[in-house]
Amino acid sequence: MKILVTDPVADEAMDMLRERHDVTFDNLTGSGLAAEIGSYHGIMVRSGTQVTREVIEAADNLQVIGRAGIGVDNIDLEAASEHDVKVVNSPTGATPSVAELTIAHMLSLARHLPEADRTMKAGEWAKKQLKGTELKGKTLGLVGCGNIGSLVAEYAQALGMTVIGYDPYICEEDLLL
Image (cartoon, rainbow, N blue to C red):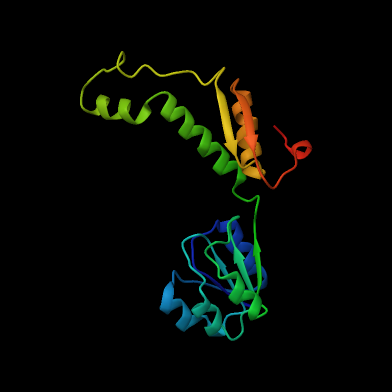
């Protein structure tokens, strides 16, 4: 199977694909992608590539669109369905990375790290002005309690936070908060 990968993915993913398939990496987009997609059976994308109707209609041999990540909003699902092209994603692949980054941003904001970095580089010691706050004892509200939200909740609880969550797609007894 000929597979086109248009966005950077983990080396391990590329190695796994290359074990069984003829894989090409090319950061094509838009009309350039539409012009080159014709001979490929599969395409792997991340959020940087828009798989539009134009691309799908130009893909004479396309059987599958793989999304390295959870969201498929960059793929024209209607066009894929009309052309019998399967769309798959990897909903848990980046979960720990995204959850950790979320907590890192929370800590950064609570402790004013961007401003502290700026003032330190300017030769200032703004300790009193940049007094941060502890996350322990605070309440975190999550909108979305799927894989990522649940892991963010777990990490936040480990920091001593109270977590409340809302998710219209998950019933209350299935919430892991």
